[in-house]
Image (cartoon, rainbow, N blue to C red):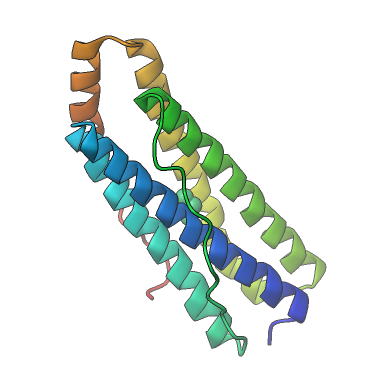
Length: 171
Ligand code: FEO
């Protein structure tokens, strides 16, 4: 059985994952309107992944006898000054998500809730991958600068990036 504090913290994370999905969906739509097909498909895929992250939490909370609550979400930014700015935002967002996952791990240890601690390990590993991927993409775009031809190749490069399918517990 989840403690009230653990349940509230997990429910807060459900909202964060849902908002991540919205943020990346808005990025996908923006990139699509700018003609960056590769970046756009990457973001659509990433948005789907975040929804899966959210669903895993929902299922887990309910499985442990809690009630996963679905919240109102804040509106994501709809436009960015440049692709570089957009990927900087993506990286900063993932760093924030990693921090909130770490906070959850901390609570689970404080409460000696080893089942939740174990469940969270998948997210800890996932955040390492997500931050590394965002950093790799940022490095590429920093190399290109504002060169139009470079951006075209960058777009194709991002399309080629295969994001690992999720290997966590089935939802
Ligand atoms: Fe679910 Fe990208 O963190």
